[in-house]
Image (tube, rainbow, N blue to C red; front, side, top):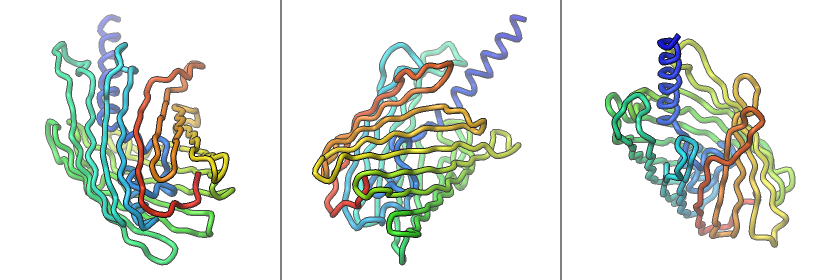
Length: 287
């Protein structure tokens, strides 16, 4: 029985390690493939970089306390976009490896270069990602994205992710894809978004799915702020995580985002980030 418990703990710890190295950029937790349209699109959908002819810069710092009792800076990123060409840097810091007794905190440096081109009613984009700090394997991957405006207030998008199956730490990221939409129900006031994220299961035995839904709300054009809420729903159709982001400002926005798991009736905050986006262009009518 003791051996069985040790094995179960080891498998659980291994799953945590694999999940950690595939941690999504913070921006991708509250933005969507069909609506991201500034420097944050570098991490969500490269096609969004040319959705608006603008220059923008972004930064984000993520603090979490889900793995340990102490608050730690687990991720930070910087990026810029200039009329469809963008570059970003992201650093992820992980807890000690739970499979060893050594004090060996690990980190990964990720560099991302992306470009996007407009076409009638839409944009195409690609992204090149390079990871540094891993243990083995190929550390380079590619993404391809598409945005298409079906109607003035309704946009659809698709993204192919992790082409080449890059290895940030020691396990390849699964090939995946995203299909989603964004609807400006009330321009400048209310927006609804949704998407399905698909990825190969570990071992290549099938495909895993994550469903996401989000709402964006702003009291009006004269109010320089907005609220965004998103939910992650697993393949079993149970809510796994909630995300709430508040932004203040117009061309220069400060953003605070909190998130936490939904398990056993608990909705505690386990991650908090602070950041911002600065733009130089007329903004799209979205909250």
